[in-house]
Amino acid sequence: MSSLASGIALDAAAIEPSVPQLKRDLRRAQLRKRTMALALIAPLAIFLMITFVVPIAVLLKRAIENPEVATTLPHTVAALSHWDRKEMPGDAAFVALAQDLTLAKQQNTAGTLARRINSELPGARSVILKTMRAMPPVDADGKPVPASGIRQALIELDEQWGQPEFWRVIAKNGSKYSAYYLLASVDLQQDSMGHITKIPEDMSAYREIFGRTFWISLVATLCCLAIGYPLAYWLSTMPERRANLFMILVLIPFWTSILVRVAAWIVLLQSEGLVNKALMALGLTQAPLELLFNRIGVYISMTHILLPFMILPLYSVMKAIPPTYMRAAVSLGSHPFAAFWRVYVPQTYPGIGAGGLLVFILALGYYITPALLGGPNEQMVSYYVAYFTNVTINWGMASALGALLFAATLVLYGVYRRFAKIEVSM
Figure (cartoon, rainbow, N blue to C red):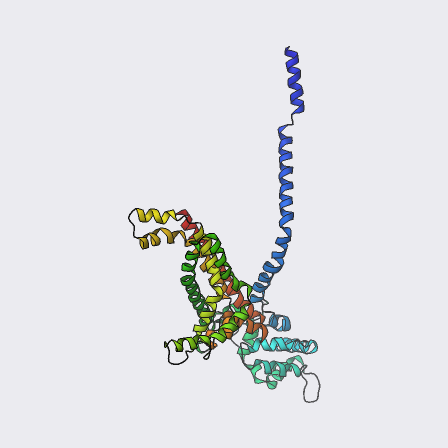
C-alpha cells in the first residue's frame, strides 16, 4: 500500500511543472501582453513623435542656433579665438577675414552673414557686402595684395575694419550655438565682452509684449470663468435631455471657423454695427462706442471663442456632485449662499483649474483675433512669431519667442499639477 502511494506521488511530481518552469511561462505570457500593447499604441506614438515631439525639438534647437558667423568666417573665428577683445586683433585675423570673404564671394553665402551681423551692428551689412565684392584685394597695379598688406587694404576699403567693435561682434558670435535669440526675446543682450546686460529702454519691447500677452490671456480667462461658471451650473441642474439640447448650443462654435467668428464680430462691433445701434436705440449711449481695433473687441471675441473650453470641464465636474450635499448643509442650518460657497464651490475646483488652464494656454497663442480686432497695442507674442517667420525670415527669433511660450505653458501645467496634488491630499 505504501509503495502504491509513493508511486502515485512520484507520478504527480512528474506531471506537475516545476517552479522555474512556471516562472518562465509567466514571463513569456507577460512579454506577449506587453508586445501586443506596444504594437497597438505604436502607430499613435509614432504619429505624436512626428507631429509633436520632433517639431518642438526643432523649435528648441533653432532658438539657440547661431551658425551664420561660424560657418561663413571659420578661419576668422579661429584667428580671434585667443583675442582679448580690447585692442585691435593681429594681422592674422585680417588675412583670415580676406580668405573667408573670398570663399563667401565664390559660394554666394555672405548675405546671411551680413544680415546677422547687421542685427547687432547697424550698417554692417553694407560694409561686409562692399568688402566681399572687393575680394581678393589688389593693389594699384592690379596685383594681389600680399598678406602683410591686407590689414591696410581692408582698413582703406572701409574704416569700420579699423574699429575693435566690428571684430568683437564677429568674435562674440563665433560659436554655432548661443543664447543670443533667447536673450533678445526677453530684452537682454551680450555686450562686446560677453557679459549679459539689459537692452536700452528705447529698444526694449519684448518684455512688454510678453506682459501684454499674459494680461490679455488672464482677463479672457477670468471673463470665461465669470460667464461659464453660472452657465455650467445651470446646465448641471437641468434634466438630462434638456441639458444635452443646450450643450449642443454650447458646442456649435466648434463647428465654425475662428476666422468666420472674428469676421462676424467685426460686423457686430463696428460703428454702424448691431451692437452700437442697439445701445443707441435703448438710449444707453449717444454716439457709437469704439469697440473695434482696441482691447475691448479683443476681449469680447476671445471670450466668445474660448467660452466652450471653460464650460465643458466645469459641467463634467458639476454633473458628478450629488445635490444632496447642498440640501444637507441647508438642513443643518446653513444659509443657501453659504452652503453653495463653502460646500459646492470647493468641489468644483478641479473643473475651475482644468478649464482655466485650458483657456489660458489657448489664449497665450492667439494670433488671428488680436490681429483683426486689435490695434498695434493689442498684438500678442504669436503675432511677432508670425512676423519673424513670414516677413523677416528670422527663424532664430521666431523660435526663441515660441520656445518661451512653450516654457510658460509647461510652468503653468506644473503649477496646476502641484496644486491639484495638494488639493487631493487635503
